[in-house]
Image 1 (cartoon, rainbow, N blue to C red):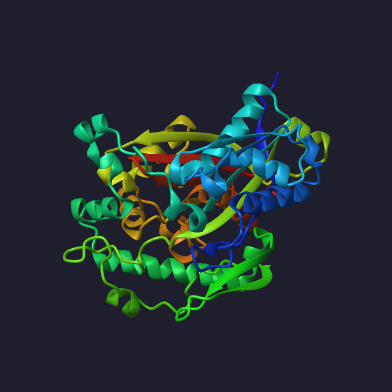
Image 2: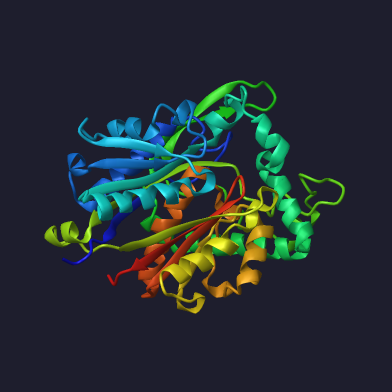
Amino acid sequence: MSAKQAVIVSTARTPIGKAFKGALNNTHGADMLAHTISNAIKRAGIEPGEVEDVVAGCGLPEGSTGNNVARVAAVAAGCPVTVSGMTVNRFCSSGLQATAIAAQRIVVDGAPIMVGCGVESITKVQKNMNMNDAVNATVMKTKPAIYMPMGMTAEVVAKRYNVARDLQDEYSLQSQKRTAEFQSSGRDKEEIAPINVKQVIVNKETKEKSFKEFSFDRDEGNRADTTLEGLKKLPPVFDPQKGTVTAGNSSQLSDGAAALVLMSDAEAAKRNKKPLGAFRGLVVSGCEPDEMGIGPVFAIPRLLERNGLKLDDIDLIELNEAFAVQVVYIRDKLGIDPAKLNVNGGAIAIGHPYGMTGARQAGSILLELRRRKKKWGIVTMCIGGGMGAAGLFEAFPA
């Protein structure tokens, strides 16, 4: 009996909105996720009730994205109550982890059709989180850096590994320019499912609220007019005196959701589907919490070894741009070809809705691999608390 494969047959995502002031600032987190689930299902050409389970990643699973948001979003997406749901949290890799679990359910449990997805409403959750008894006293004595703010860990990486401010700003400019080209080419439309929104607009002077209703169809974080000179003028955020991490070389706070429909290869063949590609495996690794940004340095080599591949075999890599400093360090430490890395820009330009990002990257890399007629892609990111994750995807010809 041949081994089962988990293949990805469709992907859909919202445009990414700026947190607090952006287009999605009044959209419930479950509605964002439901929108992508329903659109991924439509693009797959299946009925909602044919999905066995929805696995959703979320970095802040409470409030608007709480109450098992996977189950809530499945119902909101029009799935019957027979479709189950599970929410998982591994911070910035939550969307990738959810996709991996969906694939594993297919390979191990024989589930014919699954949805892997991710969501984050930073607007509605981050400033309203329940922080009651949030810090563990035992861990504070043994490894307090596990609670260190991510921006401060980025400064640790910059200082510990001598990543100069100029390199961070140069990389950030590249991200902005690559994203601008991606948008101007129209390739982003293959990923995005436009969503009707009712944005809250607050008057700066009177604080009076008004509403703007429109079809949101494009990531709004990209600053195409960014210049190196402008980036150099920005002050450090986390260490005002000696720091190098600025608003310009960090990911933006954002809202958004993404979803993928996965099937067994046998199910896809039975339905005459042409999958985008297959999920081939996930690796996670741990590192010191105070330098959490370097996690992929350990995850990527382990992933390659486990799958009998070398870095040169990989055609494209999507490395989440939490901060430019960690991307630059990982790129140079592993010897990643810049021409293969984040070819359409990344979170510095379009933002990083924590739970969404891994699912977005998975869909994006498969579409880009197909466009380039290439085969192997890695989706990877650092994770709060001192971890790294890396997932391997194989693209299929169109």
